[in-house]
Amino acid sequence: MTNKIFDTAKEWKIDPTGVPNADHWMVAAKIINEESPEVGKGMWSVPRTSTKQQTITFIQKADKEAENKINKIKDRCKSVNNAQIIYAKPKSSITEMARRREKQIVPKITLQIPECKKKIQEIHGDNKILDREKAKETTRIVKEITSLERKQHEKRRENVFVMNKV
Image 1: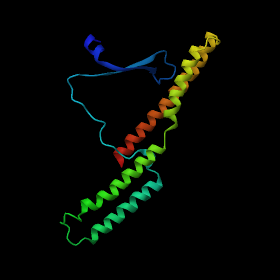
Image 2 (image 1 turned 90 degrees about the horizontal axis):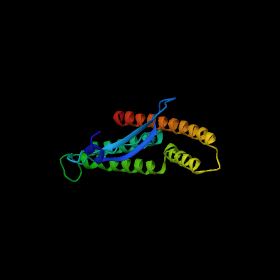
Image 3 (image 1 turned 45 degrees about the vertical axis):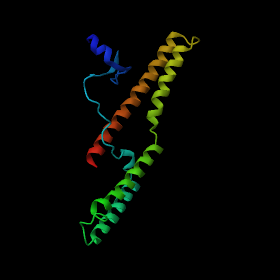
Image 4 (image 1 turned 180 degrees about the vertical axis):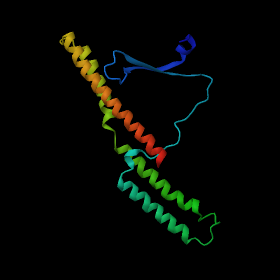
């Protein structure tokens, strides 16, 4: 690693590797090329949690209503009442509903991982616990974190699949 790369590296993290029985931890950092352009988060998509039956039913109903309105239009070239404007309304209501639902559902795993990391810090800060017990408890919590991170990774993979499928 060169000094230039080291100087531009940000957000350092040291975490378990996720590999069972590994005797090391993974070091990760964002390495930034200062000359590269700024890239945004990308296009928003409906999250996997919003692909439940009630959501799909809502989408199908809104789509059917828009389709019926479009079929009733006589002059399709009008700027006031054309297919794009009609389809924009259900699309924005579907997006709004999905975002509202996404904000309501905070994944439990997202909350559990920081709690486990906090437990590790508390254990290492407690001088009343023997070193052997600290090591045992830390190992148990690290295994729990690894398991939670695997589940989180699998959910992300499912979200990518849904995003590309829907």
